Image (tube, rainbow, N blue to C red; front, side):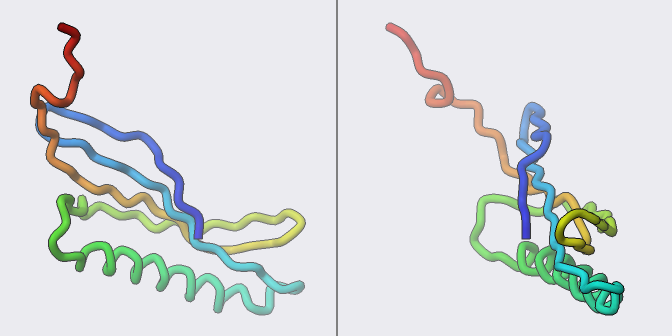
Length: 103
């Protein structure tokens, strides 16, 4: 599992915290476990989205837009998996405390 923040759009009422999520696993020589890894990592993506969506008493909501993309990296360790962006919408509160004042 790898999570990295990406672009964070801000408008006059909300902040959209966006994170790129990558879930991958090693592929054996001959790719004998490739189908299992691809299936498992896709399901893990769905599970992570569902878990985030089912959170209670939080100050954010999920933006329900997902595109789960297959990933393959062939280097020292060959891995397959999936990645997607998950977006958390948070209200933006412009108040006097947001910017320090100099008296």
